[in-house]
Image (cartoon, rainbow over all chains, first blue to last red; front, top):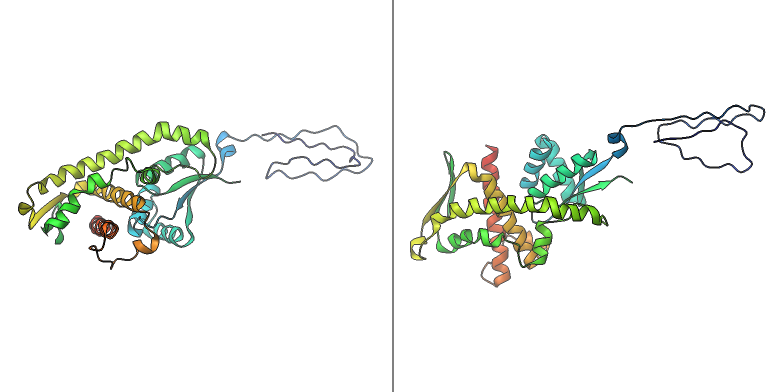
Length: 126
Length: 163
């Protein structure tokens, strides 16, 4: 990902420049401070660019609470109390985000959850 | 009917013909074919909203694997249920022994059957939580009883896995 910042005379009508998250926006320069344009470049790994995807489990009145808890323990390796917390969130709020991270792994988790017949989807964080 | 754990087996004894028949129906009930609502539930999409490309890939690569997984579970259960083959009379007070190593297959098949029956009947959350409804009233009531009976077996197997 590239982000360009120009240190130059401010324009009459300021143009919005997209800034990548985490990159500080430069302070505007004074009227007499005209310098050569500087280009800041930030590179990120593909994995970072892909972040984040959520693995979401949705409520289903048929699946037993104890079964859902067991599935969370098995698929994500969560301890029982954490698995139960997520299960209750699904039950009470209709959905719970079980995991966030790269897309490939999120898809794999969803596939595993579907193997246990849970209603699960992946969602890209907007 | 009694259910207990004996060494490496889960034993369901004193089965009357009615419950034995419900058990024998697990593999056929778990099959969603011919019921779009059930098929949709068993093979749910991996994304909410419009991601046609991803859904198409999922259908092509993931669903066949899931289908095989579910089929393998129902086949294992079907093989265990052969213990219950016989005439109605010979089914009286039968005992079914489930090897604990088949627990996962049973959990899966019971879950499939419950989901398919619920989807076919379009049961509401309220109906599903009504465990006291008589199974005699109608075909729908019988299906609800079946969902609850299979759920009871699932709970028992889960409890045994926990031990």
